[in-house]
Length: 452
Image 1 (cartoon, helix red, strand yellow):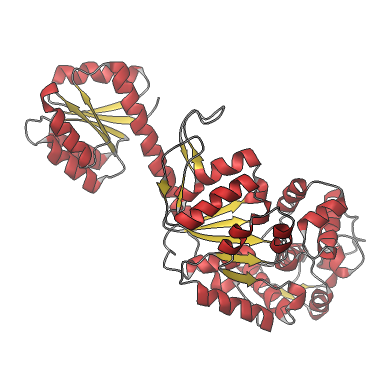
Image 2: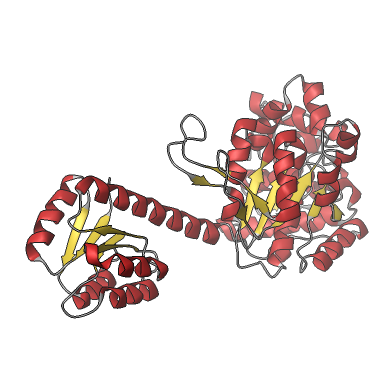
């Protein structure tokens, strides 16, 4: 056990003895004999847990509790009380204390209370970090395109963003489904709350439900403590279920309940938990076909697609290639201190390419070319082989270089892109063509940076 404990009690002997015992089990301990000393100590260095006596010489313990809750709400307060003050201790819990223990304190009981308080402190810290880390900025500046198909999708996203309606975003791999989801969140009243991404295809079935809904201690082998799920983390914000078509029938039932009643149970739990979460889902599969095959619940499908948004493939966005490529180059210039631009011949090749990997493939192609280019102008020789049409990797930039052969990984990446393009982005069909499982294909797409 580790953590910082502040022991607040006016009995010097009690403080000394208890501090020694707590330090023996691995805790760092600071001591205070009055309420004012406790408030000053917390202001100087916030502890994880405060053991606070109800009876102090200068201030009532409840008054000190109130100050601590106002100034340092993350610190977990465990009240120390005599047998005659149990009612007051219960009142302290109503006012925000984590727990109470009666003096004299059996050390094993106190250890349990402190451990629970530390776990709650860790959970609050984790949730706070997730909320800050998972709240994306408005991606409007990078959500570029002037083509009619893309403009129509962007306009629809802008109209539905302020609502709480569920949205189903469909489109090929790399067409910008996740960025569309981020735009929905950033333009909604929930923009200051978490945006949680769940890669449904990346999680095994026995882990997916635990990740989504959490689990109770002992729910399965290895569940040594309770864990909140991502729906709890996303409370007040939005959850993005990427590749929703990969979710099993069992998980589909629980998702339907969340959408209908905003309630669910943790794995192994009985308590009904309520959340306020907007659900945004995405898929590159034909969900209507999956419904007909009995692989996807029809009621869940219609519940998810209250609003349906189709992200067009890059090959259907005439004129957007140059706009996006220029944006990517400017972003790379700012990141690396470059002063590069795409030459006319290289741009003509970019226009000619069919882009089976869509915007994601364009981004990687421009980044590779900008890094290989040692001059100011990106030339055809700097572009990846599939875009040049010769099946090799980009030529090395040094003068006199005769180029290089493609690595095995590059050939694999190129072949996967070609197969996906030939299959219209349908991952199940591409996996079948490649002779690998769809989950294995997903891992390779993530490895090669080809996911939305």
